[in-house]
Length: 245
Length: 222
Image (cartoon, rainbow over all chains, first blue to last red):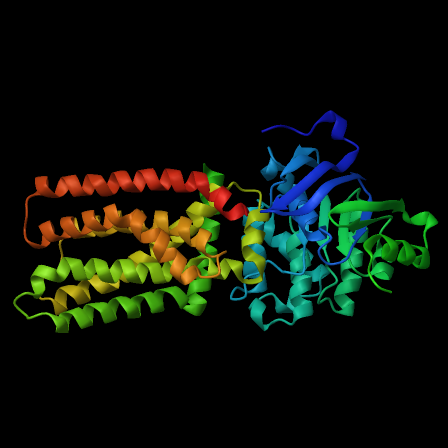
């Protein structure tokens, strides 16, 4: 076990030469990605580019085959538990138990994360996501959009400083999209860091400060959003990923 | 240690709540175990039924147990809940013990219901404390190995076949010890004859609880 390195103080995420293989299939082929604390990075890429694998490695769900990965200053290979305390993950899967109520799901995850003043925190966060009236309903009775909002509540329950979002807009209703934006804005304002993957160029460009494009298991392009418009991003995306217009 | 126990209990609490809502595991396991006992009761002559009772008991409990164990991680796969668990800031052994204690509880509940019915149908002495100890030790063995292989099998396409194929060869020592020990108890054998089988089961439980908790992290990772 190790503490966060002093060299990592400015960086929320440091990825150098990351590879990940599943059997003979190489999903990540040397990814380099440095994300400063407080940055909002959006990663675009077609299906199979390696976006979800990258998010899973950063979330410590899967181990890298090679390369150096530090999240919140902790090496994900040696100190995954310490990294997880700092991470919140929203994915197209909700990680919620269908037969438990919204309250029971949040209580369960709250206990697993040692959230202090849990009841109070649950009340605060469930109000923020607009589900206070659904607290005692089983998750399976909630609509897809409501489940996704509850999933956002689950992800931010322990006040993570780094949010990893894997195509979070999937299944989100308009309210939930706006609410996600609000939650992430609050997080960014408090030095929170966000890494999001998406297919949707306009949506992603609107959300992030920095953009990156993944193609064939590598970061093929990385730029600050300031000097970028949707059309030039789209052209670059098509050129790098080889996808049809 | 307090935090470790708190998180193990949180997983157990979650599994019990889910089971109370669905009754998915206990009902299917219980029905199967009772069916086995009733069928065997009709299959043997009344005067020979007592001789095979311990075999019937362990056939019912082990096969029914596999049925329940195969469901254990299916709930976790739904909506990526296993990944949700893996995202929690806990080591793999916390998840393992949480799931193992849940499986153990469900199997013991089934045994508590099945045992009196077996005694009545097979006309056996109603309560033997030694038998309770045997059931507890054997069930810990089943749950310790079964939880590990259930997590392994849930990611395979043919998980219903994969789990028994992995599980039964490993738990054979416990099944043999449980059948032999139960036979001694039901035939009124001495405690010295019984102790060797109890030791086999206790040793198996300790070894597999330690080994399974150590390798569980690698099993769920990929």
